[in-house]
Image (cartoon, rainbow, N blue to C red; front, top):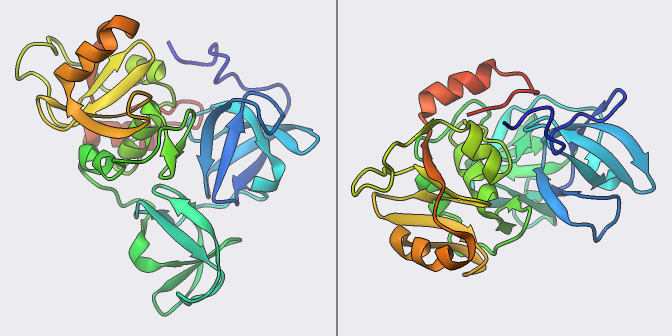
Length: 285
């Protein structure tokens, strides 16, 4: 079971210092090197605790899902801020001024968090970052109701191991993004999601059992159903987010990775309530 005994989620020794991601996105890596394997990403405005600094890097634990890794200190700022809005567009620019002709600071992706400081016309000033057009923002407590629709917006995005942003993401990064937009925080990796997300779909492989939004798992892979037969996933075969018949994916994947291990169904209303009541050390869907 994914928990504090899981090294990916084990809190480092000492007292962490709260920070926020002030860059567009922060890579969280296996070690304190620029070319170390990327384990996950933290989106703009997400918060973490810094436990150690080593050169240009910091050992952090993300508040969203407790994931631990190393990130560039230049991507972080203190103090942590309470968000007022969530980025609701697939991606958008953080501008230097409330003007579409101004120079952009960086891109931010769906589910990035911002803290509103002021407004100028239809632009929102984001604390410590820049300006975003209001049409690309939603209140931080306003969510969508169809994770499959959210996932479909990522079609064609490149496959990126450890990715969670719209410019590149992996299989579990896609399901995290889709459900986060709907107010449900899944744990980061596919095995964690299989253990903790929603309820088991009994007889999932019987015709007509799977529903839109159900997640289907292999050992080390996950995707989402768009209907009883059609499947969307970020995968290394297409090297992108792609839609295909589930039966075709199963046939192609089986020789190398075996058959699916099962399916899970997340009830949004129930899981939102659980997430609202959870602490940073227990974020389960």
